[in-house]
Length: 380
Image (cartoon, rainbow, N blue to C red; front, side, top):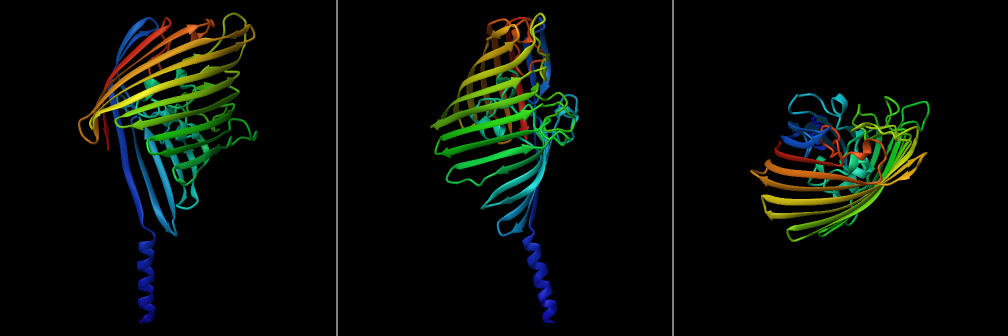
């Protein structure tokens, strides 16, 4: 009898020990876009996933005892208007990972994930925080709007120590050439009161050069090149109903071949392009007018170094955006936003001479482009 009683206690203890939870969640972002110039023509269209990418996902955990738990997340991206998969047609193109988390030592996860620029630095930008796609820096050159995710990735995130957290990623090439299409990144942030300070660095070798490497999203990558390096820092400060932000990022693209947004990037004549460098300076502001309504604005100055065999040129991009958002409920909101880009500085004889607001169908026929969007977003 004692043996049977002990067995019952052990079974009951095991049931309490291995508590699990699984959550189904999602976002549906759908709206109407107007673009004033796409190759010289106006475009009116329904478009999905701008303030946030439309998605559904599953995430969960299992308590393993002693502060340790198993965690997982599977997240799908899709287009509301056509029902097609996002991220190059991947079933779980936004995220797919499994790992373990310890309250004392941090979290280690394996799979397709976000890099440290997205995890830490993006929150200080308008596009990576409240604005979304239209507020991205030119070509989302710094990936603060997560144009690409990283495959084959081991990620570490530390616990939060008095407001400070750090982490990093390493993405395997899965190739006989160990460094071919690999990625690594590190980042950190500090939060206290209304202050957020963050910094991050990313390095990728031959992004998108192989089918099974770190960066290969079927056209969702920001650049096809021999090397991509991103470094940046930012700060947000909230006081009362207002939040002010500043972010700086530097992106260097060695021997760029094309952009996933607009295709080949070639200088005029017989010149060859050795590198592109983007220096992005962003200021942003958000004001919570009421608990249900906010307005936001952002401006980014981007100075580019276009290093070709014919010399170094400096195109300049001015990008400005405005947004208003009203919550109908805790899960449903309406928003109106617009972004304008103007290209100035040196002419390169390439597609970079024409304005392109990320999210537009394609480049303008001149140096300016405007996109306006009215949309509804529902979260579940």
